[in-house]
Image (cartoon, rainbow over all chains, first blue to last red; front, side, top):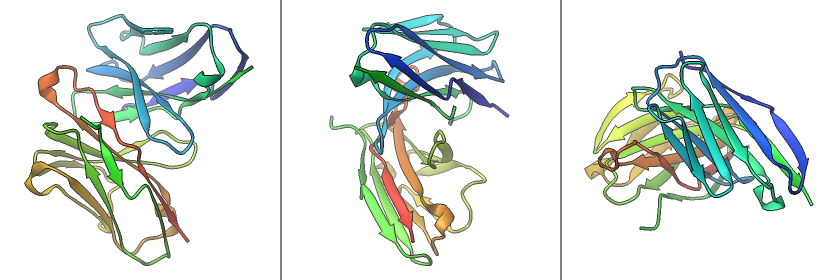
Length: 111
Length: 115
């Protein structure tokens, strides 16, 4: 059974700082991995998707990496802004149909 | 393309009542998923449709829950005899395998509060 863990559970940083969010998964037989952002009381916004054959994906100030063999992914946020404050969720898709999510990292960027 | 939509956005009901939620996927997305998210947790998979066929159901989907996707377009999720433990955010997502990486696009969710 796939299990996804995100560390840290919460993070508070001053504006402008670079930061890394961590995601680990127990079964390396994945099809892809997605990072999502969730604002309080809202749905999920997809940030980046990394296919199992890829090592990283970049979008603006965001960079996600994937090391499938070790069961790890990181989301790097450069030059953080108060608008980046949200919960960040990591989810893996195996060769079935569902996404398995971690519990998320709550990020607060202080101005 | 307006994205995945869900209705209602919020629902407050008394224990024992039945509720029904609707999800409209992105047009031409033939795959539709329901997830449930409780406070402080990530979403958990409930069920999956490919066109009108319900192909997978989680053990979380007790016999009080039923989902349909008539004609392979919108989907409904009904909860009968609601319990306080059903209070959660219910999220719908859709995907189109023809687009490649099976990326799932989520709607805004329906927040259910059972009093």
